[in-house]
Length: 178
Image (cartoon, rainbow, N blue to C red; front, side, top):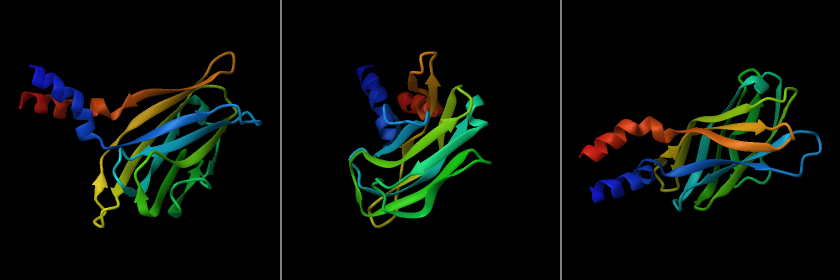
């Protein structure tokens, strides 16, 4: 039984390789916008391409304005630059870098502004990360959804509302049974 408990603790690391993380930057906005940074953590593997879609939903997404800033990105080549599509309420992107990278790095920033002060949900979908191994091997990534909340005092917070771990519960149960 100790072996099963140990295995259960390491399964997320086996199933998911890299992580995408959002971070709210505070104290720099002068226009009532929210600055959100998107980072990728390759978990010490060398990756050179990241692609995906960032989707916005919730009441506040109706009148949403999003500017994408990729000037300080670790990715220097953008076959599909990250641009906000107001009809689809999403940012689709594909970027790469020669020789790859293996440390947590900035992909781009999102300057988000809404006329409605309600929660905004952010999810990343169809995300893929490729290893710099000469074969274009796709690395697994942990999917998740987040919610930006603003309290009555104007404090902004980023809360993870779901992660892909629960979507793999049957795989985990099967592995534990083996």
